[in-house]
Image: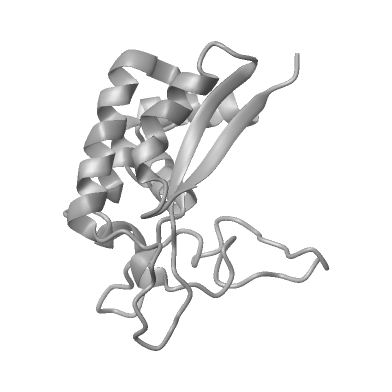
Length: 162
């Protein structure tokens, strides 16, 4: 049987449709849904109309955690992964620390990312983005699995890729 999953990016323009999206695809041949938050490109201080700031992002995460209570494993994100996205936690996943070491496992080379020409993308699967406002689910998932050793995150990773 084929495994079909949805991965969607949450922005200021679509966050109100998350519940509708989950309800629409639940019970179909789709095996689950995963979310990332929009990550802006470096724009020299220009406000990005799609980026969601922390207080609003925290509320969206609480809403997704509520959806997990109803839709369970259809939401392909662990509680730990979602909690890492919150404003009180996300810096330990993406920020470089004072000893000039990288916290982000993607910056440390945990995943090899290639573009359509087979060239290495740096620093991660997103390429050149504003890492200080990273919303890509991959570093949060890897942190939950490899550093937090969260069992639910490991189960979801296995379900998705194996």
